[in-house]
Length: 116
Image (cartoon, rainbow, N blue to C red; front, side):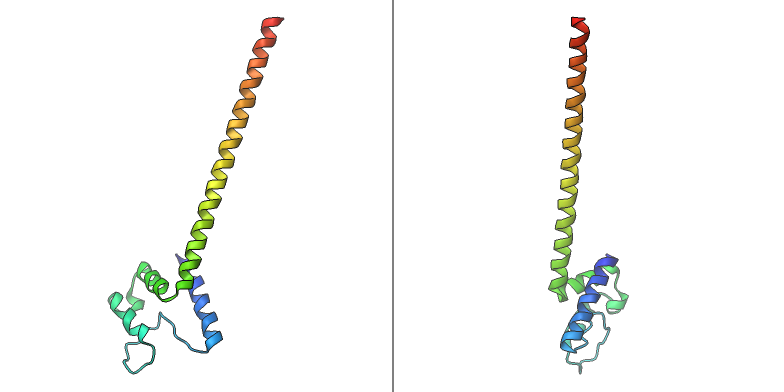
């Protein structure tokens, strides 16, 4: 979660550098006279504004505000799942091959003992 939060903040900082607008979603600004209404909307998500939210609420707010972060999360999850599946398949194949070779050698040893 912390890594994801860091990625989202980096995306926000890159966005600020491009457009020059500091529209931080984690800014706890309740002023109605600001031009950034997303802060006012996000303050209703939990008590005390974003700073008073638990980390899960932070992530929900950030992901709803930054769809690119959601894409990053999906890509990371897919990559992790694919890596886990590949590792499991490789381990299963190695175990099957080793068992097959051991069984084959045992059968050959038994045949060799019988003929001699």
